[in-house]
Image 1 (cartoon, rainbow, N blue to C red):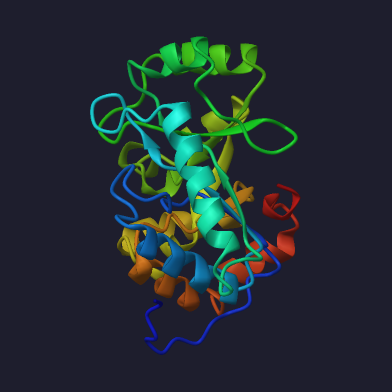
Image 2: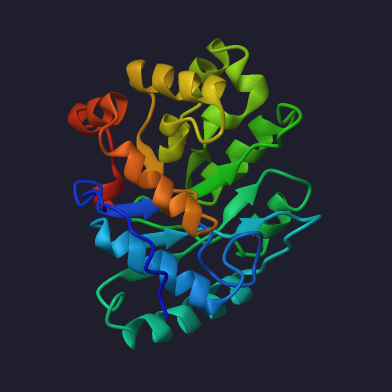
Length: 244
């Protein structure tokens, strides 16, 4: 079943929990089939992950995933995981990567947003082209719902990266930051790698994730293990992944 391509697996057991991936098959631009999902999970288990909090896109215009659909796919994947030796010890949890768009507040009102962790975190994503003008309203409603927001891959948001002070403003608003580990390998380009390094140096990163959509991105994680900024982040004691 599984791709046997040679790979040296790093030990990410110090992280333990991956926050942000697209492992549920058929819900977005991530895993297309169950076999894709199981192969990625097997690779991540060999890297020392014990739990994967997978986060399909929830975008009104493109991926209008509902709580029922996400949780249904999660349970189906869990059943398969329990039957496959290579992945049976990995715990699968699911929420969404919630895009702050016109549909988000409706999801909150209808109880569609799925929190994770004891602190009831949710993973939110900013629009790519422009700063969310209703951010104050979004954050207020998130707080009223009893959730704590984690911003997905802030290093990849162009208008934030162009003005580093923007990150400080978001921190003042109480946002936690989730960094994509492969940003440190240059996978998304050198400018993004530089921003990722600067965020780590500034002590602004609390959560890391693979943002894995396919097997090649999981293999890319192997390059992170020897990265000095990754080591600095782990040694900082700021990461909360292991608590989730």
